[in-house]
Image (cartoon, rainbow, N blue to C red; front, side, top):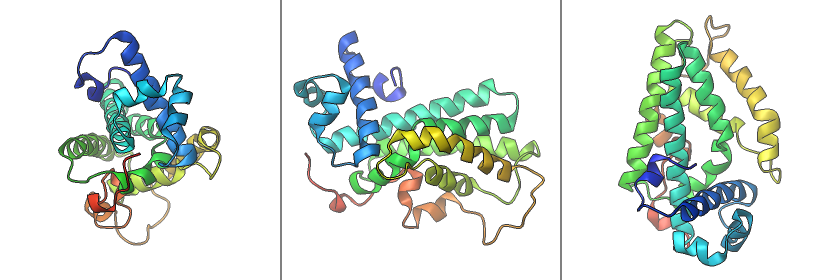
Length: 232
């Protein structure tokens, strides 16, 4: 994900170092989804096509790598959403674009890592999360004001199914996301449209609901640092 806000804040790198950084982030994202957060870092380096020393030169340990993967993920998704708001004249089309980009970025597969490895007090993670949530709220507000989004849903009602539908089946990695997720997300989008054809049980799901539940990773939060595991 070259050119993201995360990478722009890093020291200027030579072109080859920048390419290696992108390859490591991409390889780590895929392997975390396929094998979990404990995947050997050497295997990540091998998939990225770089040496072990190159990986450790960019990332001192596993926790740092995961943190940067998450920051890159959130930054990239937010930038795509902001672009959709500008480029899509139709409010619901911007929502559709956000939903499908979320699948491409493997949101559901990476989510389980967040609560175990991230510090929810990290100010940069908090800032990125709030920026992403703000742009999604804007997308939903515009779709609602245009009369296309059913009025009885909130941001959590969109985030939760996105995470659930973009979580690969065990042992399948990206394959099942590419094959099934986009199809099922279109079914979700049909259910979000007006006129609504059903009465939803319970109440709308807000960001506060997500953060107070056991599913905090859905809103890209982190667990208490005392629950995190070792470095490598």
